[in-house]
Length: 116
Image (cartoon, rainbow, N blue to C red; front, side, top):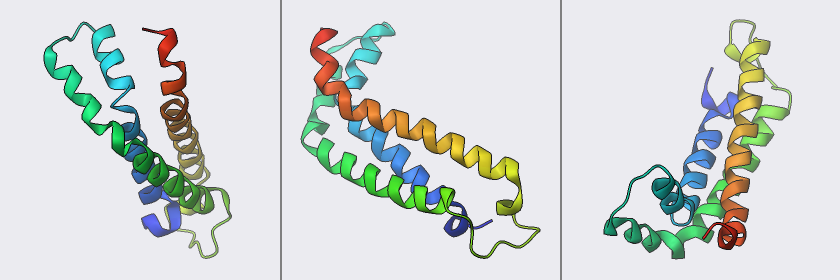
């Protein structure tokens, strides 16, 4: 199944952009919670000015992923993976997992003062 029919590529782009959007704020907290420390953690804030760009890319990619995952496929041959219910269900689950990660990236800077 090509990613054009499945929404795999926009979903992956949305996930990567969501991770990049949250690495400046959520990354240091997660690393400190895991016991990783060092002066280099402060360098992760260099990505802070690019956070709106990453969030925008993530939202646009998730829109295109939603269009391909939740709309019925127009041309799907019986031997394609898009015809299998399990594959479509897996894409829907991945979509919602990535959506939650992007939502965390969006709201975390506003909730951040409660943790520090």
